[in-house]
Image (cartoon, rainbow, N blue to C red):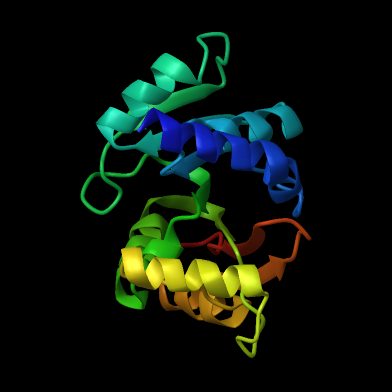
Length: 197
């Protein structure tokens, strides 16, 4: 498990900065990284946005290993909350991060999770999806097509287009959905929760 976590850490060292700065996320002070694993992406957030605090929500075993091997006590703006994001209460936040999570699941499970996030999200908050986006016609990029095949074989999920992620977010209640291509391994999709809800 530590080896897998090291690989995830390495990936975010390559493209984490581009992911966290693709949109101006400085208005969000309380961030929850669901399935945040090693905290590598959380570290990029606290570096890019010095006013934010990040809670990493992950399974107990993952959180313990991350504390032991990856997140130092000096990282005071990063904390852990143990749980299962499909079953347990989500910590309140004004920005939720789902990085390389939705591609593991069917559309129905994605909407279930996004609906849970929408309910927990503070009014005016948002959710940021970090995924490898397929071209709208599904023609590529080749690496994303290969990721999609891998997800189909190993899990229930698949890679999706920006339009498909937009439909999932809208199905859970999010609005004003935008996406950005980073030019790196992963792209971002941002959906908002209205102020009055």
